Length: 178
Ligand code: HEM
Image (cartoon, rainbow, N blue to C red; front, side, top):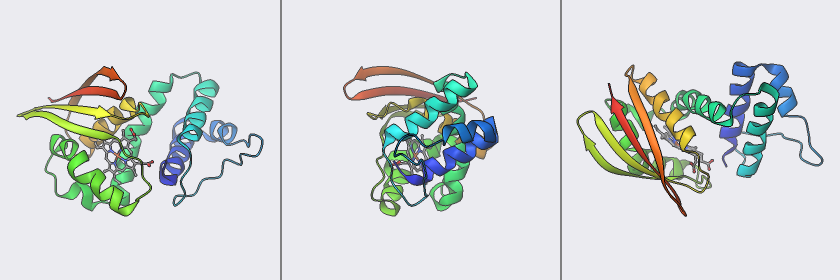
């Protein structure tokens, strides 16, 4: 997983849960120094370990941490590459373009990025139905990113999802602009 996701996660934990929790999370374990740079790439399992550490220290649900991180991450990603959202007029448009435009451009910028698959099933008026598929099972992060997008556009959306298959892990999202 991209180092930028790790460095943003560390900043997020410092801002949201405080420096003590971040320090505990970053304590070296054996040979693992837990030092991350934006340009590096690190195993996804290491991010999971950081999330679990916050979960234990703060006694908050893993889902809660990943959701809040998604909301936070959206504006940080936009800051890294503003052109990716500048062509979109609203939240549903930006979300519907994740697979066909945004992540394609991300892959050009960072060929090592391992990105999920999205597929728009229906986009009608204020309603978007979309498939998400990824072995990382990060639909709760995706939901946070979608809410982050709605905050960016100053709009309100309701996001529901349900898991429809396990192999590959596939989820149907229903996004409603209210
Ligand atoms: C609402 C919009 C977006 C959604 C729903 C979304 C969704 C996701 C999800 C769920 C992941 C985690 C990987 C996985 O599930 O397998 C991911 C990774 C990523 N996304 Fe997006 N994304 C969005 C917008 C963006 C934007 C605007 C950028 C701009 C830079 C971006 C860049 C990335 C990067 C760099 C990764 C990490 C890939 C890696 O670690 O290898 N995404 N995205």
